[in-house]
Amino acid sequence: MAEPLIVSRTCMGSPFEITAYPGGTSGAAGAAVMTAYAEIERVEALLTDFRDSPLNALNAAAGGPPVKVSAELLDLVSFALEICRESGGAFDITFAAAGMLWREAFRTGIPPSPGELEQAMRLVDHSRVEMDRAACTIRLPEKGMRIGLGSIGKGYGVDRAFRVMKDLGLENFCVNGAGDLRVSSGPGAPRPWRIAVKNPFAKDGRAAAFMDLRGGALVTSGDYERYFIHQGKKYHHIIDARTGGVRDDIASVTVLASTAALANAYTISAMALGPEDGAAFLRRRREASGVIIASSGAVTNCNMKTAEHKGVKAYAAN
Image (cartoon, rainbow, N blue to C red):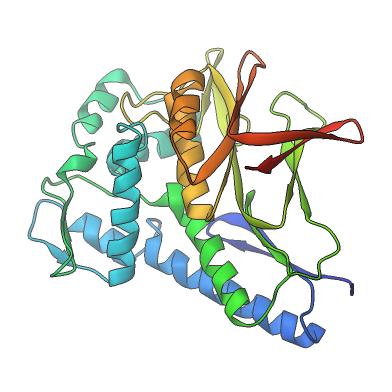
């Protein structure tokens, strides 16, 4: 097989890398990769809350009448709300109201005060989001309510780039959005994609396991990705939307699913739920499997097959 084309860029505030084996000519692969990156940029413009966007326009209208949105944004919010319900609110896209406090906390290194969190948490309730599919509208009933789609946005960008490359005829490629991966292997591919799962306790970047994939999406979330220490306590970036706080009993969650957006949402849900409830949540998901590593080092397998490969544990989907 010819050497792959590897193109890296910063998109959606994160490092992206697309690896593509030519389907016909390297030029065709290059054009497909550039088109895929253009699609990621389009998704970012739709979902960002760092500048003007359709999502920010919806948030600015909170407390007012319903807002007409695109069918794409309506479908994404509908998809996310279903996972909010499945997770019992541990994952909640309306946490964005309180999430703004945590965004500032990561800038300053000082967590929000209990009073600030309590006030913001009054605006967190996914069940209050009003959707009218026939009219293609969404309404946030109280001023200050916000929807944030960062929990699925990067995965959705990966999925859209994947679809573009498939539609352009590529068969063997990997789209990696800062660890949110989706891969494709054609019938003639000599081997699956081997993906390392980070050991959350290893300072040297050693892997805890490997996953061999010919298709599907793999996402890992962990307490080591983005965090700060304040007065001896570690505050990582995955918040339990039911409490507004962080957990200290779970180190990482890896989920294998059909799409990166789904795997993205499920890893965050399981991280917020904790080791036991997170494992129960993943085991109920027929369309996904996962591995949870607790802060104690205990590993819980949620519907994954395991095998030994040259002395290293490897996982594969059922």
